[in-house]
Image (cartoon, rainbow, N blue to C red; front, side, top):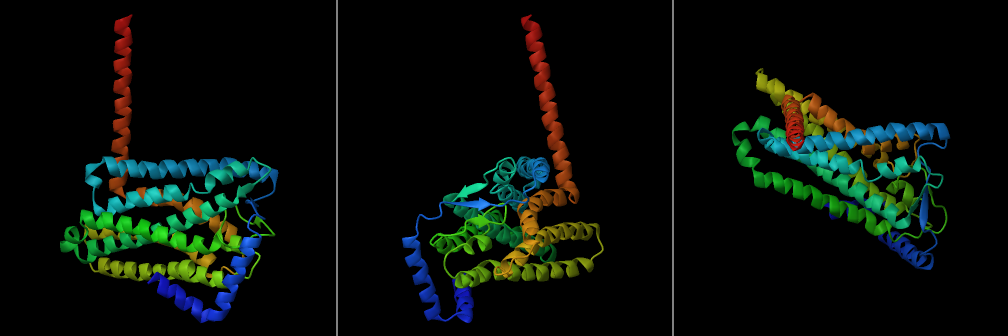
Length: 352
């Protein structure tokens, strides 16, 4: 389906002869200029020294909070038996992906705030592109899986445990990673062979694909169309499908007035908030890759740093089960530490 959709989009915007000539020219120039550009220079968020110090402190705190918040959710779900359900299993995997998404570029961005030379090797740049699309593709499929889980739980409650079995949940998570890998490889396969023989400055804090391909020494219009069809349009179509599915769920919920329906409404609204925060910036950046907007850098910060931070906040603040389990886990940890402290105190007292 992906390959057919990409081919249709490419054929709509260019002739086969034009596409063949473009890629032949790119390949010839890639061989002749293979080692011209060995690194890219990242402009970052600001050139002001004062702002860079502020950004260093601010994003260090944000990154630490993101990693610890998502890690706490993963540990809580794994350690609490009453959270071993399909919804929380998918939520735990979402937190793991968010933690990884916040880590593929943020540590280097933070380090660059204190460095005069903000360079990244060609291999490092391609690695960032790969992991961005791997994690982004996996998260898209996982968000769709969470929407499907809520649809089955609310619209087909009697068949919920049968449909959302353990095998189904594991299969959905594996599928999300498989789709992410294939999506990332499809983006990287054409980009890595482009000839970069001139400009090497990227106006961002990481190697974002629309900005990197513009530095190539050949016409990248065909690759831009390919990127629209594989990233922008897929994100847009998936977002529309998710909006439709959550609309159906909310309509079904409104037909009930019980406390369980109120809880379902709260859960679905939290899910939809996460979906909007993730898909909004992605659609804006990748549906119009030929045009640069001043807000693009802000949106890049939002969906790679702030969205992974907001996800655990949204889920924990609106979910009583998770909050209760976190309090129970923290009290258990503190209790264990107090017991260990008492044991050590008694042991040392006996030695004396």
